[in-house]
Length: 293
Ligand SMILES: O=P(O)(O)O[C@@H]1C[C@H](O)[C@@H](CO)O1
Ligand SMILES: Nc1nc2[nH]cnc2c(=O)[nH]1
Image 1 (spheres, rainbow, N blue to C red):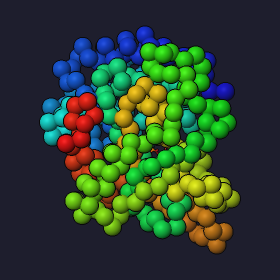
Image 2 (cartoon, protein in one colour; image 1 turned 45 degrees about the horizontal axis):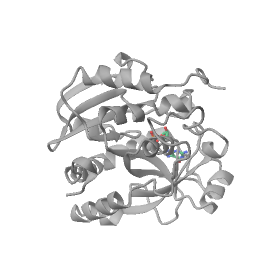
Image 3 (cartoon, protein in one colour; image 1 turned 45 degrees about the vertical axis):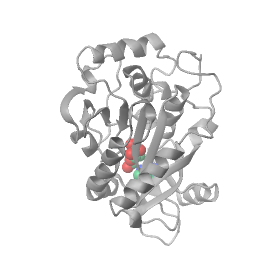
Image 4 (cartoon, helix red, strand yellow; image 1 turned 180 degrees about the vertical axis):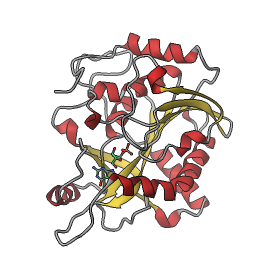
């Protein structure tokens, strides 16, 4: 199916990589951030950076997608110790699902308590506009329905239980914090909430597919995030995620619109600074042990 499809990444493998990283930086991150397509500017906000190219980190996958720089950056965001993935991995890159989510387990072993994920997504909700920021309240995991779940295979109880609950995957307090911070910053007009649907990609959706996903209850569609969320929740980290609506998913046979990655990156450029402010302000309100200030 996929290259290395049968390779599992054990607790010991993850620990070896985490220990390798910890030996090279004094930063002890409690917040981990994953930057979506074209949204890597968040990592550049970190002060006193110690950065690693993915190719230099033992066992780490490599970024292959334009808009994903491929660097793991440690540093502080307004005084809070953080680690930031400047570039994530996707199923369509050919990696097994356990490998694309490996960095999340490494986050856990680095001491991360809260994970913040961003992504670029196509809007399905007809009230959404390009440039809206959707606070994710839930997800539909299409590859999961087909049996491609990152927790498939032997379960290691040191990470978490065999059958983790997902009805509380997206932390409600953090969602409220995003609303509060967003309104304080004057972002109320483009702040939305909704359900994110992950598909395998890399082809964008047909019109029949976008219509189906919308009917199923999805507000936005993308190619990432849900797998990372499942792994983060399995090992007990708190999760907040948001989608930047970079394009309107085409739902009408008369439409001349065509989804494309350039538009995705361009919308990221336009909204990037505001997104960085939203996330960095949220980070300043997250205390050690997951308490909110
Ligand atoms: O990493 P994310 O989910 O932000 O990337 C989205 C999905 C595809 O990788 C790409 C399509 O333009 O953007
Ligand atoms: N699947 C999918 N992923 C996206 N990422 C950004 N836009 C889109 C989209 O329209 N569909």
